[in-house]
Amino acid sequence: MYIIDVTLKNTPVTLSVQRKEEDGAKSLYKQVVEAIKTGSPAILELTCEQMVGKTVAVVVGEISAVQMSEKSSTATTS
Image: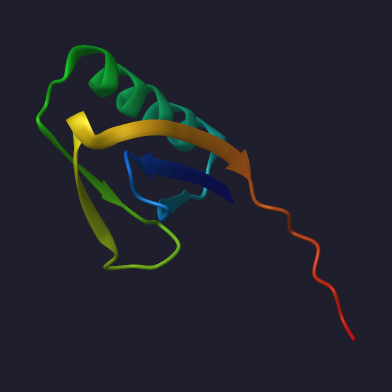
């Protein structure tokens, strides 16, 4: 599982969506970076593959950073 985090300007909250495959995560990451560079589209709609039905719409001009990381599959037990 891969996580794409989007950070907005002047907001301490990070928006996150997940992709099951690395190729899908890289593609989404590149899409967000390209949108930041060009300012187009004005609004970017992101969907999550982990939480079905989760959709986030972001004003591209408000994005300050994007990050892609692999979700660790290790679980800790008490």
